Image 1 (cartoon, rainbow, N blue to C red):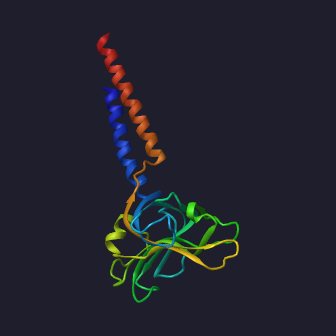
Image 2: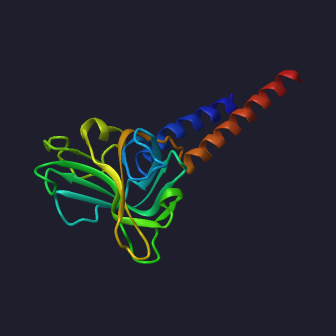
Amino acid sequence: MRYLLFCLAAVVSLLILWVPLAEAGPVTVQVTGRVTGSNFVTIGVASPVTGFYSYDDAIPNSYPNDSHGWYHPATFSLSFVDGSTISTNEAEIWVNNNSGGIGTVDEYSVNFQLYDDPSPNILTGAFAGLDVLFGARLYRNDPTGVAWDSISLPDPESVLSLLPDDGSGLSLIAVPSYDLPTYNLDFEVTDLSVVPAIPAPGAALLTTLALGLMSANWRLRKRRTV
């Protein structure tokens, strides 16, 4: 009986501790989309876009304005049909509430721009030898400005339904001269899905619980065979 009570206590402890552990911490979002315009011959219109971005949802707002949320750093990576990729560990998440855009809008973007040398951006395939000029971003907005009344980080899975207009894309330029021409690629995000993850303490508790159950089962079976 005491082994069963131990297992029950482990389950109760897991349930008590799991809720706060799941509320804050690293968040990884899977990105799915399709190309809507491209200067790259190997990346055609309607071809797929995949990627992810990740951040800690406990990071504070770094922008001193009641209408804007600026959260960084974040990692951000996109892959295209020809194997070309663009990624950085210096991305930022921008949340705008009803101001600062063209007209009156609510906005959400995950983006990165040109940084000082050495650049933290990594570009491969058709993007090799280029760098970010005006921006590389996942961008959605609500032109009516009624999507939300907050500058806190929203649930990523609510972004597509709340913000109907998409302006995602890349603007790249050759390096090291930074002369024209520029290379542009536009895409539309079709899905944002948070990747489920078990926090490390939670995983340890699950392991402890599993070992406890195995031990209890072994002891009970041994007792019955004696």
